Image (cartoon, rainbow, N blue to C red; front, top):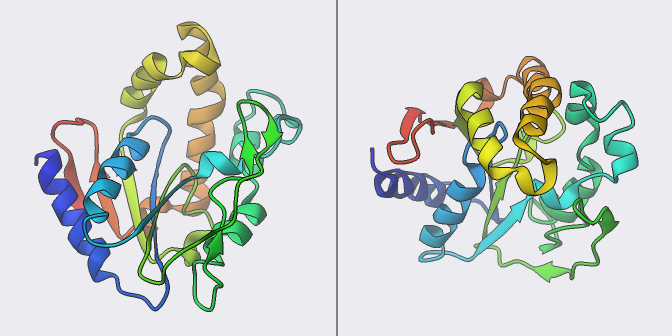
Length: 219
């Protein structure tokens, strides 16, 4: 299907997920699957109907000394130590959930600068939609917080090629990117698949192997 058709279907499903608090939507998937691009495009459509809160899990990294405590290429470290989930839950998911106070933050840490972020406390409307993208969003600590769960599915062979063109600004030369994905990111995602079974838990699965022709494989 065309991207426009996909966005219409997702928009309809999200708008139908009515709650007495902001609807918390996650867009999960492996690295370089197209999660952020999809979330940004979807936000534009949803903003025509309701207020949208855009957040990325990248704003909730742990410091380097925690992220790499098991080794810079450790897949277990990637899965277990990348994100400060307690901070994320307390800053975003609980305030926007049942009986929440609607006061949230969009980030607490800048992983590029390896420093804390003093982001302002914002207040959501009850009719808002939280649109969250990131890796590992359907892990056991998080899965029950989501009101709608989307998984972007792409084969690792495709995502690694995409990453080689995308990630040079912080991972280095192409051979360094391939090494990082081969040793850390892909094995880390496989640990996630075994531990959390995200495709089984997702409400919607999108095959995003072709950006121009995405396919919904679960709805």
